[in-house]
Length: 287
Image (cartoon, rainbow, N blue to C red; front, side):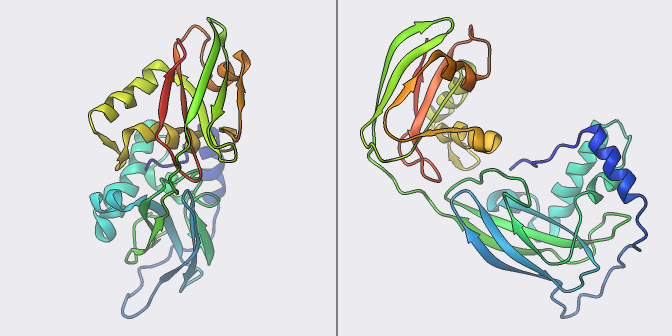
């Protein structure tokens, strides 16, 4: 899972200006002993969203909190290695991206938290949609405010997003007009009361994942055919089109959803959707 915040130079400048004036002394490394520095308690379990209450032992301590699919967490060293292998490496990448104008420590400090909180993948961590039917790890660790180095063990909670209930819904897509300016038609689902997802995307984008699906490849541990659904939902949030019942396709609908020039070739992507794909994903050429 990629990080979901990319700092603009202006945002970084504002953040650095604010944090550089802080008078808090950096937290010194504590002696772990039998102290439980952090404790997670599950709060929300949905197919695209997870949340947990995070209680901290020392409310003056700064900490870093994030989420990852279990396979990625383990791939990046788990509890012992995630700070060095992934988190620190990510902010070092940003340091290079901005030409060394800010150090990785200055960039990472903007993400530090203090005190008890609800760690919500959507509201707190900015992820519009997790993958459905996936085990995730919410994790945190105490940090030194000035050096941005880890000073406590990493604490975790493992949570699973439920799989959506499968449906037998099918779609009759009737296209009555195809022009360089768009298409006109109608989508008629067999189950009128069930929600479905629809989007128009470029030929190149769709065929990339259609080919992967034909080859039996997985993306993020999931069927390649479903990746564009997750990608669009996660990227566009509330701007995604869902429908129930018949749906009229107009030239304006297509152009708005493709978000590309009308001369590009594109596909209609459609599937049942209720917190995840409930039917097979269909790619229907609009050219």
